[in-house]
Length: 232
Length: 254
Image (cartoon, rainbow over all chains, first blue to last red; front, top):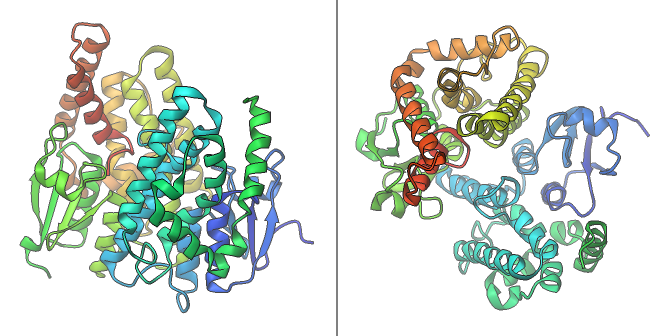
């Protein structure tokens, strides 16, 4: 097996990463073949460090030796590289702007330091914190989900009939709902039923069901992390 | 070309994100109506059109709002195809988006931290800015942007607009905070790019005069110092100051 990645498409990833899953979903939607490489995040490969020297993070999509970094960038790259099938963004510029806004909102709530509250991070707070701090984090998390549910409304997907960028940005986090609910007093079914229904619809797509981990496996991972962090 | 009344920009004169949109519209030769917003007291229009973030800039096109400056820039580029600001090739587009995110997520907060901190904290913030500039410098000198006049090639593109509108704060903070941020010896490529960018006519027409920016920055710094010295304990003033700084220098505005 070649050490480098100068041939074809290689995705440097980590099995439980929602960011990596976004890329897998997009590639599957487009029906594009690629090589999946699992990274050990405690011992990152030279290829990863070379391909993403700025952040040293997965996912990285390497296309014939050229790296594309950051999951939403990768998804848009995939969309633009294979424009002839399964569009992930609508054609109309205003609808595209709306899609980018909501994908960016999901992203802000994941990557950028507070404020506003982060989905991935605020979700992480649900199992890392206890007592009042956890209650506060739970409230924030629900508020954020409700904001997203408001945007979804009664549509099939965030983009309407078309499964696209915003759906891809958000769906991987639904695999973490079971863990959040187990660690904090929370019922997503009760709080955001439309969003939960949307999650089920997305998982009926093969691209999603093949890319998302079993929520129980995610929970095992969270329990492992809790031990590592010495929580409860 | 659309008549001016179809485009309206809600912005703030000292906000770099507003300048990005103004510059893009200018580069596209698009006329627009401008409405100055008081960022501490958002107008009903701003609250209506940007209910999620309640911040400038907001671009109204035929009364439909587009928010978040990088989203707005791409919208402008896709709606009016002449004088493109995004590269054509998907890889170059991904690269531009990556570095735009870097500018918002890493560089801008570091620059903001230089302004809002002092002592050891400020030294750490200055080091952070230097670390970030080193990464950009490397890309300009040896990386994907090697040999290019601007990040967009021969002409200003998306990344030039995003990085450039905000980089003038480097010179302002150097003066107000008496720190060295962009030493031409250490960052020759970045320094040269910035000077070239700032010389472009459309840029000169967009960015406020440096003495106005200096006065503005000094005013805010004074307020911050008097608050931290305990000479004023008004909570709203603190919030206003913080949001004013957020609007002008870091990535948390649109």
